[in-house]
Image (cartoon, rainbow, N blue to C red):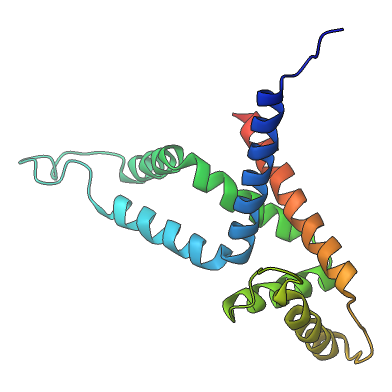
Length: 174
């Protein structure tokens, strides 16, 4: 009986899946900064006038709005991988319930406060549990809601997996 997959193929696919999960987690945790950087770089690129410095070009009639839209689309095309990840995270966020949005907010705060993953029990869990309870109390006026560590891990895994799935769907569309 022959194998339909070699060890190398299996290893490569497993590595690609893990790479996608790490990338999705990074974009989820640093979405605001990455989006701001992307938009700033895009605005910088679009701010450079097409044909600037060419004598006589400025007085010709044209379609500046159309040209700007084409340059914007071209920029997105040139940076398609980053654009797709940003779009995937934006879509994933829009599907989250109110409580999971609060969880994601708490998880991002944990990351900003240096509570990333280390060896053993990830330190982000304890911070996220406490911050999530505070956010729920502020938002829903319920101080007795507790987030268990297992639930935090499951929610985080689910959010990351969904972002990866959305990214893969966006890649298929192209």
